[in-house]
Amino acid sequence: MSNQTNLFYQFPDKTEITSKIIATRPHFFGTAIAVEENIVRAAGGGEPRDVGKVNGSPIQQVEKQEGKTWIAFDSDPALYKPDTVVEIELDRDHRDQRRRLHTGVHLAIRSAYNHFDDIRVTEAEIAEDASSAIIKGDVSRAIDKGDIAQIDMSMRSTVLKELPVTLNRAKSVDHAEEEHGHLFRVSDRHAFRGKVRLVCIDGFDVNPCSGLHHPDSNIGPYEMRANFSGSSSGKFEIRLNLSPCWMYWYGD
Ligand SMILES: [Zn+2]
Image (cartoon, rainbow, N blue to C red; front, top):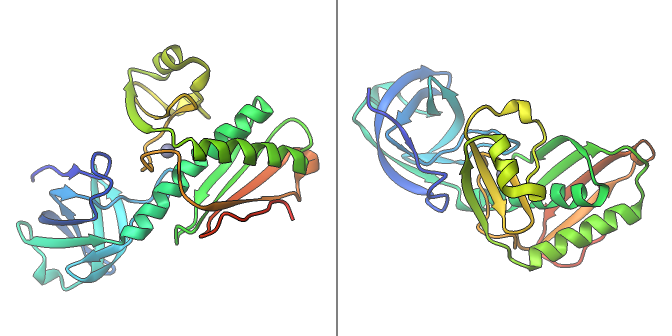
């Protein structure tokens, strides 16, 4: 069986491809295929899976198994055998919005981290439809609207600076920390063994991550909202909505 190459890290802008099937298996939706050159990313790291079509038929599920990405779609299994060539087309906007939001999540967490000195992030998820992201966490003191205003200001000025977002590698989490100093943060160092893939927002944040990113910190128009229901116990909940305007408010 030939190997699969995942192209989405190196070529995140590529949303169409003609590729050869290297393996198939029966699936609830008809067929699941693994293709040689793959552009479809499964859900993971708080990001929903890619949305798209295989030969015009909607992708129903994307699974990672046996070291491969499997794409399941409504199909007649007899039509899809190894060596068959298929056309895969992804929803470009969904991919783009996810990348913007995902980079936005890094910006918001780093802004909160800088403001509070230390935070514990318990959840960072992008909605299935890639229209918004939610970040939940806690700090060791009560939170008020002023805190969120500071975080919002920090994030907004970082967005406007258009800092380049680049990918790097480090031999280990310890090496990354040594090289990047105070810019480096990691939420759970025990989750990483050996080499780590680092996402570097120039001069602002370095964090191990396997997600897909926008090429710079200018993620475009968005609004930040905060939920204050748990704020007296130090819980924060921030939502980023991709919204086609620059007017926004928070904590209402
Ligand atoms: Zn990331």
